[in-house]
Image 1 (tube, one colour):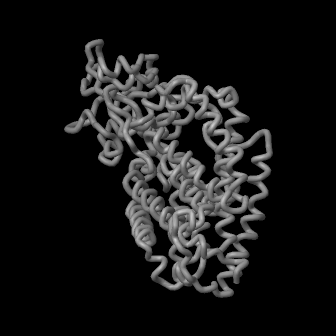
Image 2 (tube, rainbow, N blue to C red):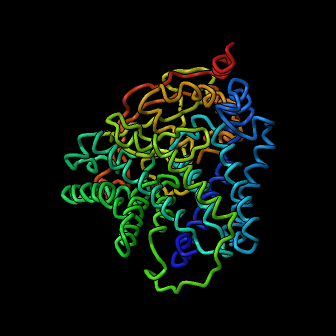
Image 3 (cartoon, one colour):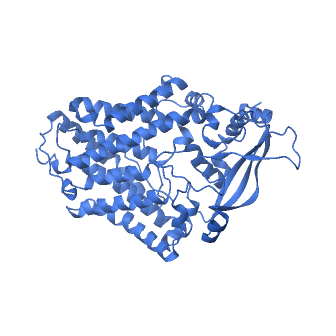
Length: 478
């Protein structure tokens, strides 16, 4: 069955399946560790409240049948366990007919989380993981050679990720067209990484080369993924290298890592000097299943393709509630300056000009100017990421920020666990407030002399002091 199989991509299948399993594992663990404060029964956006107004057809999820924090945690840890089994190669030691349901179950579990995650799960990498996780299920296991159709569909997914991102840039901010966006982006991106400061201080001509290279890798190279070998393999390598460059320059959850894994679908075994193993042909039932899946992807691709061709291109969108065959893109607009919302609290019962305010420190987002930006990705800090949007506009936080302040005033254990430092470990503060600062990276001279990675300037009050009773009244409607 030579038309259906591609034994020369055995290693590519291993990378795709184990890579996606590893990212699933990270996603489930992150969900288990963060959900109680974000969407738990007493969280900022409680799942039970969301489900009470949302029908199953709008948000298919096992939590439509039953929700409790304990059941949600169990779902996360079961998903993590199954992901670890597949990462360790468990899918290759069971029959083909048994491996597929395991992949399907993991996808159902994570879909159930995403569809009740609301604002916290509204990013493109969630849809990308779900689409990739559903796709790799059809790669089979070591009972058969990898199916050609699924490898091509993996490249089609990489194409949509890369070409969509390239188009949104060209159509969006003028700085992408005049090659100046990286004058600002490394400094203003949501969560800078340990090397972002150094990337920001690269010479401006090199920044322009970076942007030009980005346009080539996102607008030209994706087409080469469908060329004959060795061109397609070389294109896959280019995607991997450029995505690793992005990994070094910032924290973008698992977006880059999923793209890297999928790009390996274009790289044959001979590129790394591995001989093709001898694998049997697939059973007829599996061929039928794969063909049906491929036809479904082709049909569902109509809207993403229409979106790519549209002048009103949407950046990250799912056209169905199952997050299959989506459209992607990022950073159509690049900020020229970085603002940060800093949350403070005080133990004083009366506010005076002498009141001492202490800052809450987040794990990932900038706060203390002496702290070097940390490496977070591929782990995802959902609260830190949303706080970046809060600084752009209060509209991004109107549904959950009052509840966040209330939980801080209660010294809620699950909430303060999301933070790097709680300045009130013994007893809760009497007041909290939020202030808006303008941040910029320090210069080489300032870093050597003052040992600061950032400089910041107070812009003004973001949220005035809120007392415990007022916070409770605001979040309960009292």
